[in-house]
Image (tube, one colour):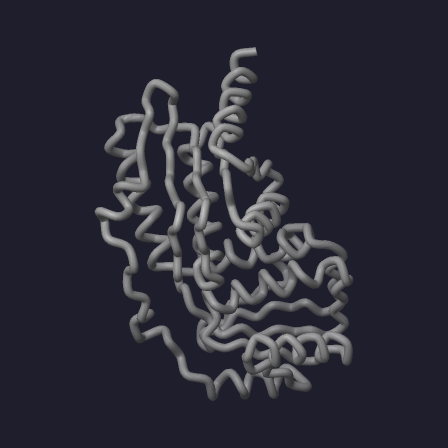
Amino acid sequence: MTDEFANRLRFHHDLETLEADFSDFRFCDQSVVNRFYDFIEDSIAQSGHRHWFFLVNLHGLQIDQSAWPAYASRAKALNIAHSMGTVRFDASFETAKRIADAAKTEHFDPNLLSDREAAIARITKLPSRRKGRSGNMPNHTEEDLARRISFNTEEDLLEADFSGFTLYHSRDVNDLYDHIHKRIDASGRDTWYFLINYDGCTIEPGAWVQFAHRGKLLNKAHSLGTIRYAPGSETKADIRMRAESQDVRPNVRNSREEALARIAELKASEHA
């Protein structure tokens, strides 16, 4: 299915535009939504630019009822993180109505136009943010980040305390993960079990895309196993949703004790 996704994305560098062709595509369930949006996020990460105008072809798009919550959530996060303006065209009556209803609730311009030519004309009138600064100022000091990361060499454990922590945007995410990478490099060891406390942690929509991207890269490079505990219901839902599309276990537990027990299970399975 990745090949099909690839054929549906086109970067128009002269227009600073990413075109997503959803024509005659069916989002039959949450997993398809997550795989497609993972592919879009990864493509943007490799594009060389963080911000793009989005041109979205909705002709014949079908979104099953069970897929709508994931579709709305992932589209919102993608737009907040990367869109300089999103213009949609040729939507069915049902899809247009759902987007228009969401726009009223979320207070955004649905930019629903009849055809591709009108949509491109609309994009050419939107202001670019490419040359300006992102405006994202850091919200956490190096000292604050340092106290949240600790190592237990006897237990092969890297513990990240995100309790009462808020990530507002991609700058906060990058500062956090850059710090974690630096601490791992200084530890003299390349791989650890990750134990993450999410109690009272808030990840704003504008931070989620980069948080998921950097977390995935960190896990691939340095994690022997990642166990999370005490997330709020919304954060837990996002973690489970994104883990599903990556075919990994979310490993979410209610308490630190349960999380440590899960790590013990992982260690035991390695030596079985």
